[in-house]
Image 1 (spheres, rainbow, N blue to C red):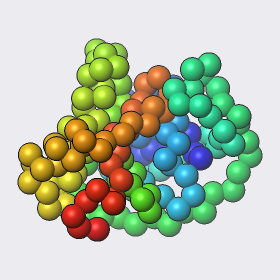
Image 2: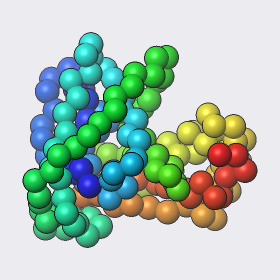
Image 3: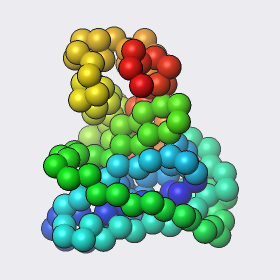
Image 4: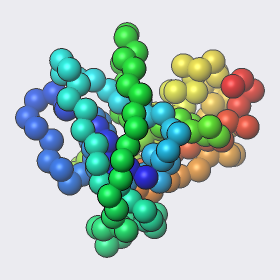
Amino acid sequence: MLGTIGTAPRGPPAPNGPAGPHGGNMDLQCIKPGCTVYLPVSVTGANLSLGDAHAAQGEGEITGVAAEMAARTKLQIDVISGGNLAAPRVETDDALFAVAPRNHFASFEETIRLAYVLLVNWLCERGDEKWDAMRRCALSGRLVVGNTNCVAAGLDKSRLPYR
């Protein structure tokens, strides 16, 4: 998996440590070969950056390190015009994940809540009614804890009435 992938944020450069709305050091196990990562673009040229490949990592990366490894990464980059992402999204063959980075003012609980709000919004963009999306997440949602500063709320595509 890639621990770090992001675009340049608007304003001052982002530190390398925590994730942010631009992506960055998320350490999410769902960012793996074959996935699609959607990132907000806030500056001309996006300034995509990636690295921090992990051979293995437990949820939460509680020691601040994982089994780091050298890697070659093959990317296909597409620009989706007209998008207005608030935070990264990850799509695998089997699931959708909305990413919420924890800021200095939010608790872990608030970060989890934000991840689910972002996922519900994404499901609504894809055709769900709000209450249906909330019920799907309440009954079948799952969490991926990246490092202690990032959470992704996910839903298996098999739980969606559309693909």
